Length: 133
Image 1 (cartoon, one colour):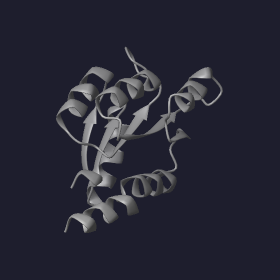
Image 2 (cartoon, one colour; image 1 turned 45 degrees about the horizontal axis):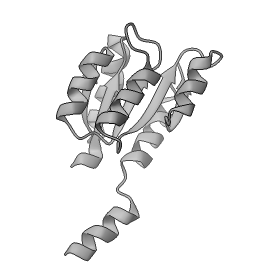
Image 3 (tube, helix red, strand yellow; image 1 turned 90 degrees about the vertical axis):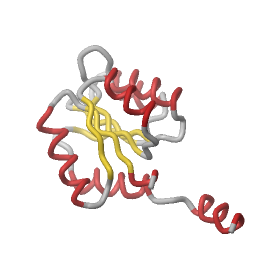
Image 4 (tube, rainbow, N blue to C red; image 1 turned 180 degrees about the vertical axis):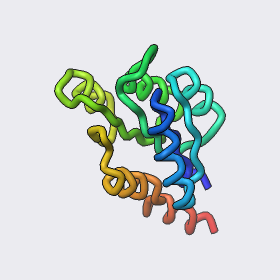
């Protein structure tokens, strides 16, 4: 079920573990990466519906990572999380197509609602499927 796969990318190990545990409990298939390179390896190997990306990470920030993800799999929706909404990185994230930017600490209710809406099969996909059957 591709539409239920979520990638969580954050250099904060505890933050990743918390989000992963909650999403796993809700029936999502999740993977975790702690840097951009590991995330891109996972994206190349797995069909995710959503990527939850930390903005500020060593090596590759979340906006740059989003741009690379889109090159590999343009169908993935990204949610950016950041501790600072006052720098130009948030605007860059929005400009490059990130669906939403959430501030840390992340409101889990808001994040879960977003993940749910972004992993829900679209009506177009349902229509295409019924046309094939």
